[in-house]
Image (cartoon, rainbow, N blue to C red; front, side, top):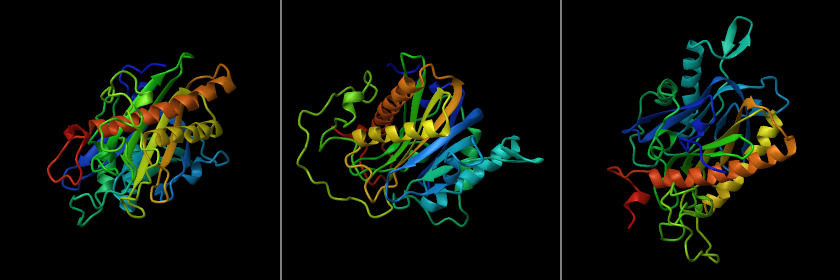
Amino acid sequence: MRTGPRNLITDVAGLIVGNAEDAGLRSGVTVLTAERPFTAAVHVMGGAPGTRETDLLAPDRLVQEVDALVLSGGSAFGLEAASGVAEGLRAAGRGFAVGEIRVPIVPGAILFDLLNGGEKRWSENPYPTLGRAALASAGREFAIGSAGAGYGAMTGNLKGGLGSASARLESGLTVGALVAVNALGSATVGEGRSFWAAPWEIGAEFGGLGAARAYPATAEPAPTKRLGEATTIAIVATDAMLTKAQAARMAVAAHDGMARALVPSHTPLDGDLVFAAATGARPLTDPLADTFALGHAAANCLARAIARAVFAATPMPGDLQPSWQSLR
């Protein structure tokens, strides 16, 4: 397993990602879309999720493909970011055909960043505009760290952010992850700079510090956020041809990566969620072996993407938490 050329989810051919942020609002939106509709699924393990149109991702639903997936700040207000994305897609002629009408299918998930120091007393919900701007900016290159849906994110001890990573498998399949990290837990071990995800690091993609010498195995962490304030929302993607059910299993496996990279994770106070996307460009050679490998790679990519999000977050005036980059 090795990284793709960008070490981003857009190493999965056909996928593009766009970010939009508002510095005063201290929040933002990230959109993943593709050249054509793609298969998608979702798995939720956190106790406080916020979602849009996730029911239609079940294998037995009429619509089998989506046009975009949206990650947004703003808590429940941020769900409207997907409306802006849908409007942009509709203007481009995209969407599920119902007679002469096309209805863009845009599931989304949100994180809570309403208490991060930004100006939240808006007169009109800003998230539809941010969603449409993120869609308009979509491309194969995009920023991580303090960007998009991770712009105002925080964790249990450090600034959160937007992260991404990719992997090329020996089978020729590609897997990628995209994540907005706003967790109750911590991505780093104790008071140090080493990441929980260090055993899965490729090269020095998040500092190359290696594993911490001592792990606080007996520690009993206390919640540092209140109910509904914490969430890690992610997308794992592949160029494999998967059914909705197979994509759902990849999302389930990817949650292992979240648990490897954030301690604790999947708490009652988090809304932890993973979407899975499959472009269908490459048929499976061995359905059993390939889906097994895809789940393992998705977990590894997500763990690495989480660490990269925190590693790349940049300090800004008014921060309520230090960034990893400011640690010594």
